[in-house]
Length: 335
Figure 1: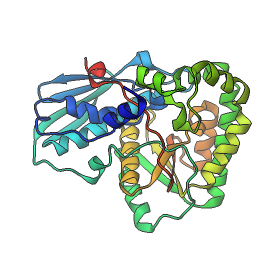
Figure 2 (figure 1 turned 180 degrees about the horizontal axis):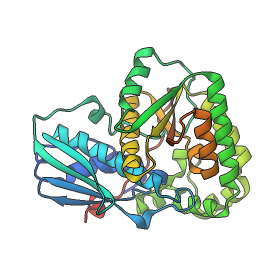
Figure 3 (figure 1 turned 120 degrees about the horizontal axis):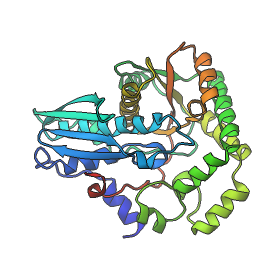
């Protein structure tokens, strides 16, 4: 299958007529959630009236995510998609952190099927790493985004002021400088880049080059281009343009720095991104200020959030759709 056909097959709605009994369709929707570097660090265990989402630690990214924060946030993203799909299939899901597995346990009861706007937006959501048009969002749109991004022990800050966006861009640049100077970070990133469609289809995961605005090329040529043309200076120039073109910056903040709150932050992000997609808005992560540990503390002081943890940073705006990242087949993620 070529890349275009694979992407079309992946990013689509499925029939949910039998999903209350065959959970594989629910898992399909869960796998369309966001994950760091598109690592898809999840394993699904299907039981009677229950699905468990467990961390796949073989897909860790220790350089960019040394405490596995993003990995557990990714479990939260998948959980939110799964809950929305279950609701559309007539199942009310009760979602809880399971300390015994460090995963998520979702128990189901039958209910009236309801296809929410967020559920309908699941195949539309993507990380659009392009410039936006800089247009302002209405007060109603900002309120909808803010409501979507709130959770239990997780709050959202929406920044629309140009001066504050510029300050956040400075933190992103400082994060780029630190990460580009880390050889382990560079090696890890390269290992998750899929430079062409054939490679992307074969792996079914990772960061597809054209998604990030790069041409599809053989892997050897892509690695060569990254070696000579990949730098903090160039990335900073791109990120400043991207941030200045954004309508808003969202920062998700946890009250407590632990796995249950990281998962909850992932759920909040996924709702935020789905709400943006439902409003025909684009989103993209700019997580550098929260990925570099010393910088994260400095960023928290800038935000004035005390001892709370800034989890995820997302830019929002109006822009073009980009090529879709791929997902592994559902049967590969079900244990």
